[in-house]
Length: 604
Image (cartoon, rainbow, N blue to C red; front, side, top):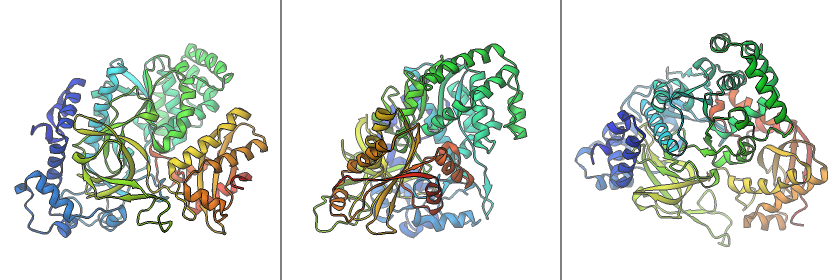
């Protein structure tokens, strides 16, 4: 039992076969509760003397002498559940160069920047060698499950839309950047390619160019240059894949010219990137002619089935497709036709959480088996608050009543939870903000459906609509675009406007295609009527919330939002369109780009 509980165990690190790492996961899942106790022990044995934990555990705790369940009980009774704001001052001290062990015993040399798309600002999160190792371990485990269903050729290539942002030094000399940037520059990224026997089409100079538009062009060019070797197509988020192929619709003729002549477009101005790509490509006029012929045909069918047409040997598309990525699945299916869409695994900047064991599961139904060695996991049970209680508010930030957090051994099938993390990188009982539901079990470890981010709430009065509520309303409201006008929704976001009374919701849409005003009027009414939260419906009927406003923005507006985040240090690899915006700069972009406004007549 002990070797399996060691986390980075010999079978998972050194075993080369898919069976080795799957067997390791079966072992730790079978005994998930004991493995979790041991994971907590390992974290505390190393870090119990750091300033933050001494504050709660005292000076005299002897971790090594406590039995597992007793240690777990003591830890959860003394250390409070926190959010990022509670440790922000500690992380800032680390960024400023303080060398006292504040959160971890080992020095923190890297800080990851969150994307900032959830609450409008980027946050520092500690990143360590452990972070890179768990990423490698998860990628190998996930690849082993995928290879059972979709075996790939050894030495094949991956068309991988991955992007590094620029790393920088904090005041105290700590290297800061996105988690994906840290990983792509680590030795674990190179090891991953060797262990999974698949190699990205693009060299490091493309991945780290710092200009996502130039990187995307080169990814597409090299993906087509090696098209007969590409085994699958991937990116961290499905947004990046959809964004890349939307660009391809405009760039394909130029890319074909480059393939024909072995040249590189003048739009690629970064010298190291140019040199690296020109070393790889050579004139292939026959390939360029074939791609041109296929693209001309694809233009006639609105690029339906683009991926299997241009990469006929590709086995699947692999990306995160849950949560805020779900709106892009429809467009991804349009590009993929019958090429399988495989949802990638579940994690965050703070920690990896679970693996997708069933690559054939549709993205809408995918579940993730928790890997009990990655962090110590707790789960806050959430129960729906009855709307007819005395007031329209509660201590909770939404329509949930919380119970005390429970360990992995006490989660129940069908119950909804918020995840709490204790990590090797210095986060202790840290609220992740992710809402999940237990859909089943793999041996002793739970399988989770990701539902949504908890703090993405549209609210004006007593109404509380989540990211999922918004997504469902937009899905229903936008159906008329394709049904009535053969148009499509490119992207969307929202804002709860309370600057005037009564406050109201504003929904921003970017649309591809021509749509008559009466159709957009219909869409506006349908979106408004699709918010079924009782507090919202009652408030709309009582006119304490005003009519929903649908703003149509000009083409390219959401690219400007992307540029705003990238310009502030985010990487395209981890970009998620913010679904509820309060940032004044972003609202200024949206309002300046609005070309039409519609007001709902739903609810009388």
